[in-house]
Amino acid sequence: MAAAQHPRVQIRSANNSALVWGGCSLGALLIVWFIVTSGIGLVAPRLLPSPSVLVERIFVLATTPFGGHDLFGHAVASLERWTFGVLAAIGLGLPLGVLFAWLPPVRAALTPAFELLRYIPPFAWVPIAILWFGASTLTQALVVFVAAFPACVINTQLGVSQVDKVLVQAARTLGAGSWTTLRKVVLPVAAHDAFTGIRIAVSNGWMALVGAELVVGKVGLGFLVSQGQANDSVATVFVGIIAIGLLGVLIDTGVRWLQRAALPWLTADASKA
Amino acid sequence: MSVWRREPSPVVAVAIGVGASLFFIAIWAWLTRDGGPVSSLLMPSPRAFMDALWRLLRRPYLGNPLYVHILSSLGVVLGGWLLAAIVGLPLGIAMAWWRRLRWIVFPVFQLVRPVPPLAWIPLAIIWLGIGPGARMSVVFVAALVPWVMNSMQAVVSIDPVLVQAARTLGASDRVVLSRVVARTALPTLIAGARIALGNAWTTLIAAELLAASSGLGYVALNASRTLDTDILLVAMAIIGILGALLSFTMQIVARILAPWSRREAA
Image (tube, rainbow over all chains, first blue to last red; front, side, top):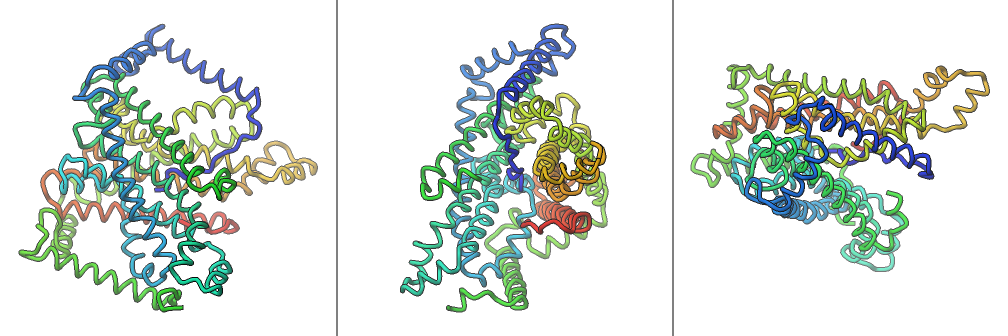
């Protein structure tokens, strides 16, 4: 579950030598790749495509259907399922997180069930999702939901429970009701942690979706990859993997941008996270 | 303050938790009763669940007794995780110690990191076939990133004053590494080990859905195909319990190895 929580290593002053060495490293990798595939043919084309074959394959997949859709069709299908699952996780997870922190008896009642389900990895839900929904969009959306939900709940709960008690008491003293206090004082402060949860949820969901699509479905980037494997087209597998990685980065960048746009009062904090 | 806003005492909290859980089980039993609204094909009753567990314990399923499936899963997970430790730990420490190595390796890592580990499964199948090798290599990839990142972070975040003090007192490179660096870095390292193990377990289950002839994920998928929902649910429960056990074991190890580290949220 904690896939997206590696500490980020900050390389202070990404100076020129770092760029030069990094560039050399990536360049060397490219050259080695070229040599072992096109150059001396050390690695069979069945196992590793040459750079030119890969680039060609990208164009082919982008323009002609493979497994029923072209690359964009698969990407759109994946994004659609992912959006369903993530929106459901956010829509249910954020209120539940607030509830857990704001009403301790509710937390006490639901914690055993929540913890029990949390330890079942999202992919373990794939077989039962197939049983319930067949090869429909709902199957993948459920897996995405399961992967994204706990991060939303846990981080929101953390955010709400860490709000300064003095702030809450001050609001109460000034005559604010429970609802007003929550809305005007607690939630604006807790929003930052909640957004961190959303960021983790979003990337967990993307990861889980790919896994679900590998197992079941007739469209999607994961399906593209598994079709590539079934047809012994390693270039297709690579194109799929690259598309999955790129979209993952784009999604994360998008959520960060959204966080800055939606919570301007926390921008200073947000840049730290 | 109303009763809803008050923190219940530990005893009351446990009582509420147990009560609510029993209530959920009762709802589950009521929904899945004979002639109830939920078909046993979609969700077995608690009774059928216990029966399936009993059956699995006594008779082999898919050619192997239950404990062989469990050992198969655990073996691949621990194998891949240890392999990742053997590669990742020295690599991460070396990357923190020698700037140039970090500059060389880090971009490659950044390139590979956004790809979910399980997206490599089809590639692993092409390269290694449907055997434990493919599964273990995917688990290895999933566990490698946290091992490397956390061991690098662990060393990078060491207070340079401590290192300089040791140097001033005449410590060699080797002594500084083993005496100062290794000890202050331990908590972050252990956290990395725990994340790595969690990732490894999650990824293994996905790998077992795709490339396996034994293991709990394989049992779950097969039970789904033969509509043995009760066995499927038992497999899911065992997967969850083992995942929790692995996580708790790591927390205990952390407390024994590095009792000075702050307790972190799970």
